[in-house]
Amino acid sequence: MVEEKSIWYKSPALTTPLLVIFVLVMLNLSRYVLQKQNNTESNIFLVITVIQIVVLVLPCILYYLVKGRRLSSPLFISFIRPSHIIFIIFTLLLFISGTVLIKYIYYVGGGHITTLSGYFDSVTADKNDINILGVIISLIIVPAFCEEMFFRGVVLSEYRSMGSVNAVLISSLCFSMLHFSLQNFPIYFFAGIILGFVTVITRSIIASIIIHLASNALSIFGSDLFLRITIQKSGAFFVGFVIIIIFGLSLLFVISKLEQIYFTYSEKPPITTLPPRSFPNIPKVFMSPSFLALIAVFIIITVLT
Image (tube, rainbow, N blue to C red; front, side):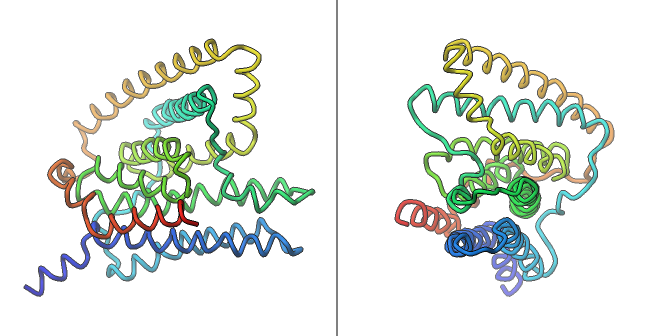
């Protein structure tokens, strides 16, 4: 009985959403810190960098220690195989074209979607002399490393013991909640799916970090503005047609490379045992009390604050 209680206490379905709740609350509180720092002469980009490390990385370390230095699955910290490079390039193209397609649907439908840097827009809006190096470090590099370490390194790894599909979906949902936006939820969820997918296939968060870096750079340096101008000059139908073609071709290339990768895995498996099936674990993953509490916290923070 004692052994069962101990296992229940350390179940990822219970502990991981609590970790995400803690990060969501801390990240929301950090907004007030950023607003106060923005009114001073302090280096706002240094503050942003420190906050991201404290809010995202330190909880990973503490969680690792609380769990007795044992996660349900090993972290995906490994070098990229040379045979995966082309697959990652095609997945990056799929990621970019899919993201642009979602934004295109928003714009054509009269909606509005903010960039990935929108969380910090209000903080840096009053700065006349923006430090480009500070932007690159604090809004592109550090978020990519910290968020991938947290969501794909810890959250996805924890849920791998309940199936790869569940792990990708739950990490994507948690990643979407991090940005505190119901309106932008679809684009963040799509991003989380692609980042989780490439992590599971390559067995490395380095692949997701690379894609995340490219995504942040495109978002901050004007991909939205470029899309709007292109639609205005070339017409919505033509732009939509081109985006869909690129997305479709990218998807075909990814599937083709995926087939080659799994053919190689069948000859020389990268792991000794396969993760369990996802379907039987769906109730345990998505109906756990702590995950429902996570949804409630996200709604309260996003809607009521």
